[in-house]
Image 1: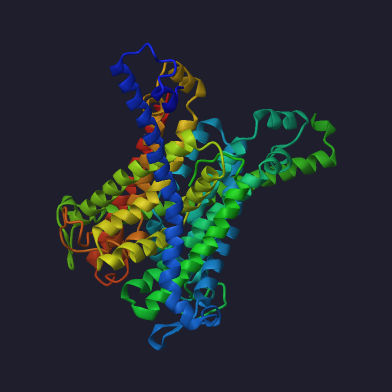
Image 2 (image 1 turned 180 degrees about the vertical axis):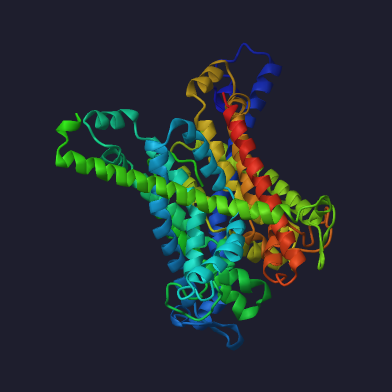
Length: 313
Length: 283
């Protein structure tokens, strides 16, 4: 391809008329600017992340400066007396996500193994499509269902465990239901990257379906599977709407599994619009903590998924 | 064969049966939950849907969802247009020019992080950089926060789709004397068009259901707001959220929320199916 310089000096183009040469020069200039403009847009992505972190840090600084380390050790969030401790929210975020992963991972892997290894061919495509469609349902729907259907059911069935129906465990279960389609879709994609010949050779040696899955398929895509789970964890950590309805919104640290609690995202969603001054700044500090946690988790997921080409969010 | 069954073989076979049964069990559990959700949605939503819901605005004693549907459509469309311009440009750079050096790798990594960043954080960010300086909640702030969410989706699918175009096509065009920008616009885009469109549709579907980023940006309103992007604009997710929480004591508003949830989910499923249809058209 001719470079702009080559055209300007007329290198190799001496026989062309003046008009043609000028047209070519113009096109070459467009070429240069085209790349510059595209690059500017790509660079904007970098600036965007910087801007998110910088703006969260700047706007949460007043609270962090005022409370210092107490912000992380205080075990209650009491706006009326201006005592802000992040501990209840951090505990709720981590616990609900943990419960969600513990429930969702075996179920998702089970579905993925069934879909890839054992499912009758007629059902395989429809069920996979269904799973992918369900992964697109907005999270607020899960929250509504949790509040209207699951919380009352839990209260009636296990009144001693779930006296109110809502609570940290309920939120964890709803999160699990929400991330099951997602983890399943990623796991299925990852398992499908295993070459058919590996599966066939293992069957040829006389392995059972489970042995093929356990000893051949799962080990060869371990990184991708864990990456999918960690991506699901990232979703659960930052989820707002599915959690807010059912977590109970108790702002005092309650280190139980099933009690009422709160999470970072739920606390922000509930209080932000009616807050100002220190409280608003403290909520933004919570947002910064959440962002840093999810950043670390997602970076880890990307590291694990670097070799597989899943196209899921 | 049956007569040669050793204990070991029997044990392996039994284990296989048990695990496969567990897998089928997991599949059933998963689908039971998901069908239960859809069933609740359809039963509670259908009973509340009437033609007037699409025309009337939301009132404290009920009304309809017309203003919210319009607002959601307006804001997600604008965000999709903005996001398409930004995302296609950045994705093109990553696919066509971003093959060497550290910078493209870093941008790709950052984009992957933004792709799954919690949407409430995006809402807080737009609140800090748009709402506070502008002095109030506005539809523009909502549009911008949705744009930040859709851009990474578009970037990812643009880059993936352009990478599927074989290099021999680019080389053939270059050999005919085409400039690089001409190759990208006329050769690469026409090959990747269906795939990029699929990505945009999936992104559109995703942002139309986002609630958290709108909490502190566009907020919500009871009024019709057609084109005034400088003031608050009603939208479906926020209307559902408010009707299920602060207005939950009014039964009419709760059933309105279920109707809205059904409309929203149906729209998103239709968009997803459309996206699938487009991606199947890919040559």
